Length: 227
Image 1 (cartoon, rainbow, N blue to C red):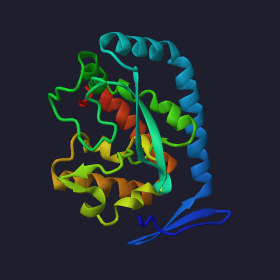
Image 2: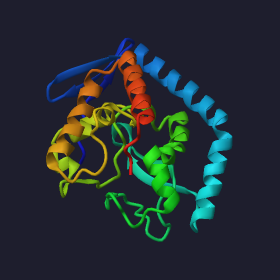
Image 3: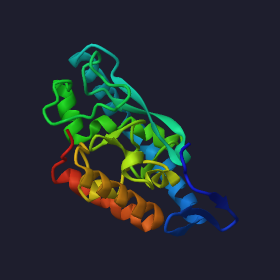
Image 4: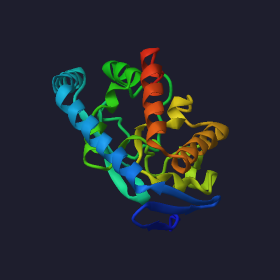
């Protein structure tokens, strides 16, 4: 059974007990965060609708199969959520479980898929996940169920791993801004990524979200490193 911590709430705070104590998050801050998510995701989906349609058409023309790819991942409080992406791999080689991680030069990736992953355009459909409340613009990146890190399950590698699920997973997060992205074949990198996620959860503020968003935009403008 997954231990997600003790969730309690009152009119002013949501408290969740962790191994280091009690993290108290003002409900007002969470309400502002959710309102911001709704406004930005909805306006982005409307504004980017022509771009999304063009990308979907290009994916369909580039290789056989649906332009969209879906996968079950960890959501807030251990809930399993279905996330959406533009398909970047051959449909006959896609791994619906996400256990087989993508590596540099992965032969499963299509020509267009390589560009979409490098620019992170494949993640745009997740704005819908943000809009419906499964995800947030900022938070720990949602991992596939059974995802491995250094050949081990994250839950086995980091005992406090599921504490990162006290908040909605994000399109971007502190770990990504710190450069902790890509395959987690090294135990040290995997642990550093979870440590960044836990720091974010325990120190969340709307200002921290804004800093992460600005850092993400700057990182992408200076050359995305996705693959």
